Every structure is written in structure tokens, then in C-alpha cells.
Image (cartoon, rainbow, N blue to C red; front, top):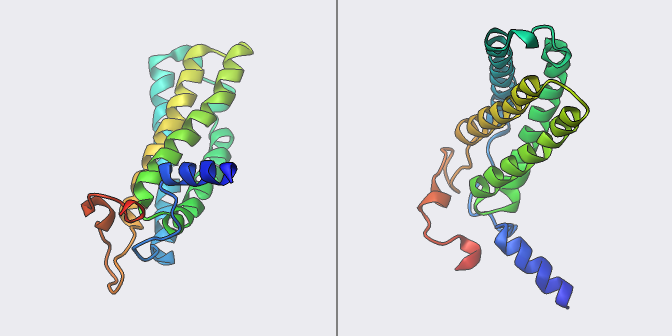
Length: 173
């Protein structure tokens, strides 16, 4: 019984209520957002690498700055995030709130391998750029998903800002 109350309280705090008051984003929009998130994230990565090698010439040729090295990990991460968005919209009546916090949490977790390679002796400036790349990917992907594949109001094909207009989430009312 006690464990059940802890779980219920945790779900309430995370705004996981399994009672969305909106329709799912359309699969077409999620697909388009996925492609644009991948393209935008790869462009942001490439821009950060280009800037880093100009600002910090000693990072030129750094193994993790090779396109093939960061591209595969970027694509996998973005696809996982894009699959997660419709799941979050199904689990919460406040999906943008929850998805933002999940994006922050995942980004912080993804800093751990960077900190590991830093501890193993990798160049600090290059590792800092890798961390900025994680942040850029999160910013691009979050914004593309929530704006191009938004939740929709019941009874309409258009997007909604229902979750933002409510003073209290449905699960608290």
C-alpha cells in the first residue's frame, strides 16, 4: 500500500496521468518533424565543430569531430526522442511540460560519457564542444517536435494550446 502511494505521488509530480485531454500529433507531422530534427541537429553539430576548429585550432582532426562519428549517434538519439514524443503525449495531459523535463534529464545523462572521456584524458575544449552538441541536439529536437508535431484538440484537426491555457492540469482538478 505504501509503495503504491509513493508511485502514485511520483506519477502525479511527473504529470503522468494517462488521461490526455488532447489528440495525438499526426504521424505525418511526427515523421516530418523527425526528418527536420535530424537535419537540424546534424547542421547544428557541423556548425559547432566548424566553429570549434576555428576558435580552438588544436581540436582540428579530433576523432569525435568526424562527421561519421557524431552523425550516427545524433541520428539514433533524435530518432529515440521522436519516437518518445507521441508516447509522452499519450501518457500526460501536460506533454510539453513532461517532454521538456525528460529532454533536460536525458541531456544531463548524455553528459556522463563526455565527462568519462574527459577524465580519461581527452582534450577539455573538445569535450566541452561535444557537450554543447548534446545541448544543441536537445534544443533543436524538442522545439521541432512540439511546434511541428503538436498535440491537437479533440474534434479538430488543428493543434491546440489546451495544456498551456489550463491553470491546473486535468489530473489536479
